[in-house]
Image 1 (cartoon, rainbow, N blue to C red):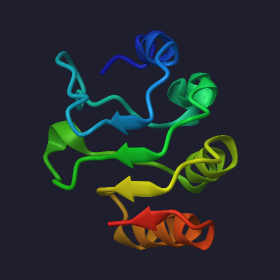
Image 2: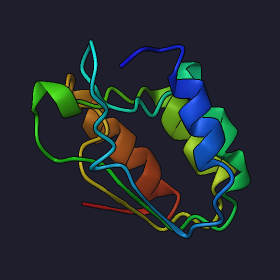
Image 3: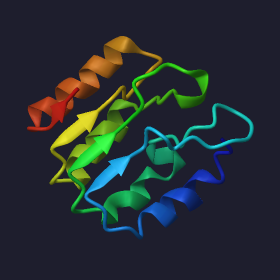
Length: 115
C-alpha cells in the first residue's frame, strides 16, 4: 500500500472509540503488499486516542498481501499507549519468527495475552 496514504487511514481510525481493533482484514488494494502497516513510521501513533482498546488482532497467515512487520519500537509504543490492551492475536512480524516471539514476550511481560 502507498505509505503516504496510510497516515490518513490511521487518522480516520483514530476517530473511533472502539475497544477492539481487528486488522486481520485491513487488506488494501493497489501496489505493494496491500496491508495497513501497524508501524509508527506509517502513522500508528495517531491511534493513541484509542485509550479504551483492549483487543488487537492481526492476520496469522503469511500471504504476501497480509504480512505485518511490526518492530520492537512499534510494540513498545502499543504497550505504553494502550494501557487497557489485554489481548493480541495473530502474527506481529511475518518476516522474522524470532522477533515475533520477542514482541509477544514483551506484551506478555506487560500482562497482555498473546496467541
